[in-house]
Length: 258
Length: 38
Image (cartoon, rainbow over all chains, first blue to last red; front, side, top):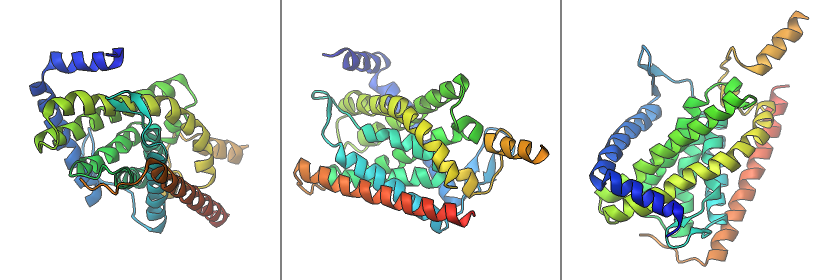
């Protein structure tokens, strides 16, 4: 057995299927509540007031953004289908890097596009099952969590080491949610045996949710962020929200005062 | 499970079409959005 699979095998064996199911249940319930709240126009916060209305409007441009993200992610999944990562255990999903990037750049429409894109990928890859319901919300969350962590333009430009570390941690958090969300659903509905869900599927999703967004996602962020700002497609520009740490705003203020 | 039973190369070809549509849409709306903002 290769070292990666052995590590995940040991991790799950040490924690036990019961613990994995317990953590999975908590992640599933919380993530589903957040997903429903966001669809209803509300957002949870860690400070008072704990629930506020969010600023995303589902206008024509937001729907176009969903379509762009869905086409690119769904198409990317189909285009790179069947790349074996660990024989018999894991397939590599390079397109998984897109969910993090879409979430940070486009906000909620990017997260929704990732969810729809995964559904499209499942249809063409022949893996459309009841598990795809969890795939839908899980991929939404894998974009949404990094979006909430790398929330402002000053963080999303990834120009400092702190920004890089924040991005890498945001990917870990997003990967954690999707890696627990989908296997729990698969195990609870007995779509696959719990052992297979927590060793095979958990490891596969966890590795894909970390490795490709860490490497490919970081490169894409650096490449696409300036153009997204320039094209007025960054979520905060579209929703007309100004942040104090926005380098563009600071530049404009400096130019105005000069 | 719903399996369309497509050959892997057909799946990849469809994927490529979707990616091209996605990039095309992005380029079109990026141009339009840039124009709108002046």
